[in-house]
Length: 215
Ligand SMILES: Cc1cc2nc3c(=O)[nH]c(=O)nc-3n(C[C@H](O)[C@H](O)[C@H](O)COP(=O)(O)O)c2cc1C
Image (cartoon, rainbow, N blue to C red):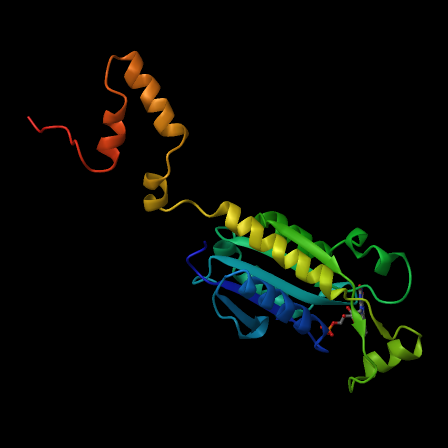
């Protein structure tokens, strides 16, 4: 298991993306990880984290500035972390909301993601909520685009994929390695046999007994 916490950071004008980030954080916590959930604008450093998930709403084909600035500013640190990015964008009934995964990420996000070497990027549907006190949402609603296409179960499924990837990635601790009989031991047994040495000797040495005498 990852020893450092996971950061889930988001940029959201009307809370839709914030709720998705909350869902991701909850799924990762349920999977046993320690998670910090923060607005991207509040993150000063990504240094303490072992893995980072950053998400943003898409407005006029671009990510929100705090999320973009976060990955731009932290790109050197993020290049050494396990990073996943997600966007919340497409709204209205149509192909884009039926298959949001086919909608491209903003070009700048894709470029930065390639530069950092992110583990995954996802595009989810968005939400236009006329109850939000917002002129932009009102205009979208008047254009017949009110609705919620975020698919929170898919968002949760994506978070669980992250959890599985992190578990699969986690290097075994020294204790785990030493306690685990495996290929290495079988190999040493074979080599020992070929060299005319007792097979168990090397394994005993690895467990701290039968140490070679110092001359
Ligand atoms: C003015 C405006 C412009 C938008 N532009 C885009 C866009 O270019 N591409 C897109 O996929 N979604 C666009 N959307 C949809 C938003 O990304 C969607 O509503 C999102 O869920 C909002 O997230 P938030 O509630 O976290 O702010 C736009 C929405 C508004 C209100």
